[in-house]
Amino acid sequence: MLRQLPTRMLVLLTAALLVATLPHAFAQDRDRREHKRTERAQIVSLEHQWQKATLSDDVSAMDRLLSDDYLGITGSGAVLTKTQQLDRMRDRQLTITKLDIAELKIKLIGNIAIVTSLAQVEGINGDESLHGAYRYTRVYQRMSGGIWKVTNFEVTPASHAHSEAAPQ
Image (tube, rainbow, N blue to C red):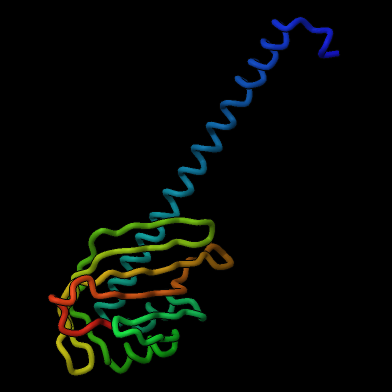
């Protein structure tokens, strides 16, 4: 049947079909961008909660932020589970008194959010003074029910010349 239609008619039908589907395609793109904005805002909020929990040694808030299979890598290379991280907070083995975050970047990939930042940190790590710049990577995973949890964390000294001890 299509072979019997003149070329001009086929071009017009194709154009009409394209014009009819464009609003739907634009709406999907707009919805996708809005969804990404919402997810980004959720992660930024969680980053603020992390910062507040760290500064106030709020173990219950940190417990809510970390996934059960959380693994953290400290500035000295130690690997900590969720239980170990929470115990360190309870025992005040690490006390952060200043945590200024800059250069926050969020990369969203499906149910994963990768956050990197630069932090100026002050505090006490064991019996050593803590002062300097550190790069952080935090990985969030969206769990069932749409709740984001921190599954991985790593801290790296940004400048050995400015740090006396690495945060853990």
